[in-house]
Length: 327
Length: 245
Image 1 (cartoon, each protein chain N blue to C red):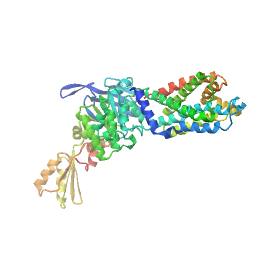
Image 2: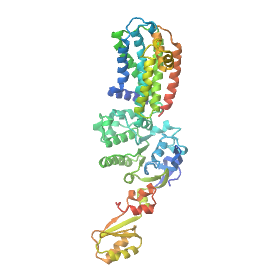
Image 3: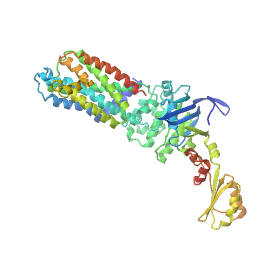
Image 4: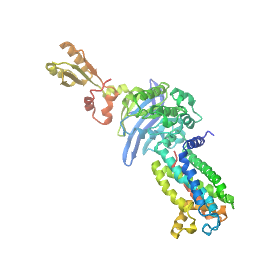
């Protein structure tokens, strides 16, 4: 959980929280969408709010932005109450919102002019930075999905926001466009911008975020750096190799420490268990000889480690089902 | 003018010029129907038209058709499509002041009404002539109050209706009875008692009366003007509250 004070201590330095949420609750028509949620976001952090569709992520960020009134709970964003002080707060936040568009015939350059306040960056420089300067006179409707997302990023950053919220930034983009947008977000991270990235794409969170907050059914399940979460929830491995005459050794493999399951199918041996089996199976194969030349080892990435957890499937079962996911 | 309202008005007016089809209903429909109806009853003073020249009766009535077309059709469709496509959410999240969008839409609606009205008079002048203004201030007050009321009603409808299609359907259902009974259709004197009673309670009838009567010297229409002023205040407050970002 991410309970804590309104300050964070990072490498011995105390930094004020940009976002502090305590006991946030929000229901729609009697259905609880966010349930006693706590969230902290420190200055300069890039935090991923991660969960499946319907986990309550978008509602949470809408409450943070003051676009929705919470049923209960306490929120402070950059020192402001998002509902009561929306006029002061909103100009300090740059948002890329899910399902929020622009008028079809509005041109890229005009969108920048429309959204630019007195605090605005040089819009032309941002368009240049995000590869849109050539499209300045193009209508919004003529932009590709990737170009639209990059334009939304430009608009989100235009007025030098102190907090950037990116909601499902790469939804519906092809892989090339996705990488392109990721590169743009990485630039933000490298520049020290405070970013809340809302996504259901685990690989996106792993690639971009310093810290990930896992949400399910409106509550926070866990939080931490991606590598820590992989360690916590993905402590399993699968070792496999081909051996047409492996029958005699299957019982011995099942007896090795950490082994949870051994299968033998079409001449292929697959051993599944915790991460210590990598060493134990290796040692066993060296001792028994001959050493297989096609040995493959599979360990989970963040997606494999957390997918079942976020879907509500028990962790043990998830580990068993995801032996095909590799890093 | 780099205020949020100024930027929104500038962008909206630019977008309007790029989508002339959107304006067809406001600019072309009133002119075409005025040309047809205005030429159908001759130019001799007629008791059915309270003793006025029928062509002049319709020229003095059709400015309010422009007002109704803007308020009941153009603005609701425009705003509902913005909400449907998430444009309003983007404006809200981008820190546009909460009232800026409502104010900008009202300004754009009033500018549209003014331009369309001038075009209508330019077309009417060489064909039917522009009737002499008996009480210009009253006419101006009626037009202003009516335009504010209907533009606000349009902004309110746009904030209420879930999609551009539904806004178009509801807008047309509201517009045509108002148009036929309250401005561009037969004069009240030839209507049956029931139709006349229905026409009397339509806001557009009151706007038309508050413009036509002082224009043609048929009366002052003070009651209609006051009723429209009250409607304008209420509609503006409700529309602004509904459209708050």
